[in-house]
Image 1 (cartoon, rainbow, N blue to C red):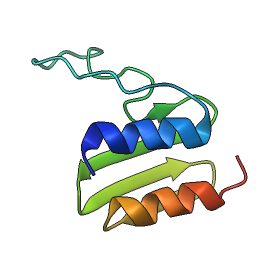
Image 2: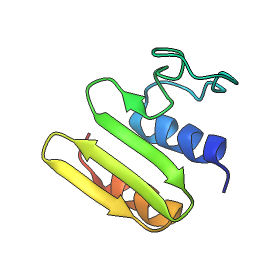
Image 3: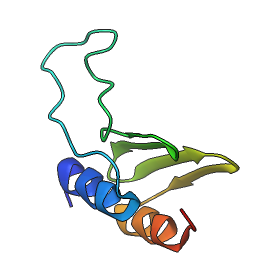
Image 4: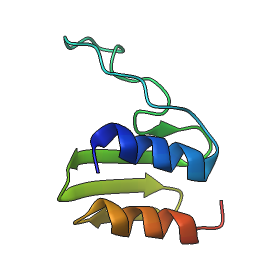
Length: 79
């Protein structure tokens, strides 16, 4: 699973945002588009690598070692 496929799947499950290709350079706000880890009303889902995915939300702070476990966790949430 690629980064964009992961974010598209999370967006579909949460019903918010869509993946936006990051800018090729770093700017303060350029990388912070909704759907690239930020989901309004939910929190953050960050893909650092295929072996490190971090989910932060209200009462949630979990790290997963693969995308399938992270997606399974999000599916089981009552969002």
